[in-house]
Amino acid sequence: MKLKQADIGKIRKAMEKTLDAKRYEHTLGVAYTASCLAMCHGENIKNAELAGLLHDCAKCIDNSKKLKICEKHNIHVNKIEGKNPFLLHAKVGSFLAMERYGVRDKDVINAILNHTTGRPGMTKLEKIIYIADYIEPNRKQAPNLAAIRKLAFEDLDRALLKILEDTLVYLETIKSDIDPMTQKTYDYYKEVK
Image (cartoon, rainbow, N blue to C red; front, side, top):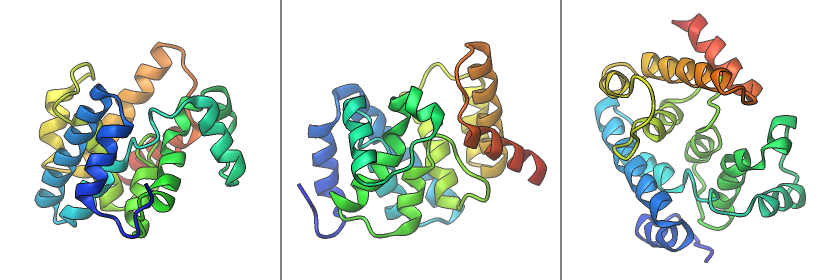
């Protein structure tokens, strides 16, 4: 299904068909949470909902297919992503948002692209999607979740920094690879605060 213009109702139905049930529920949670954060922080509500709906649109694509899509469309794959191709869902998802779902808004595309690692100098929408992905109602396991949920409606930058910090600590604890962009984003926001 290739849409001429982003249509939220059609995209919601497409996500229900494309994603497994658990991922679809998470996606709805992110879309609704992003919409609420957008209302609270004066961001475009429809763009927040759209980015929330599409942030994981490539999550259920097989890892080898993600790598093939990147190769075919000259999407850069760093060393960490090459070793862990499941991390490519943000890059592939931003590509699919444009090509398959007709999204043209650069801020929406970048919010999808950067929702896993963040980036220095994020826009408000990018921060909202990054945070909504972490705090949506179906999330149960993240540390400091209740405090971060409250903080997200008070100060996006402080919530973002806390999520980045907790993510880095978690990845170090389990001895997992850390995408360099996650570290750069943390360092940037720590310096800004």
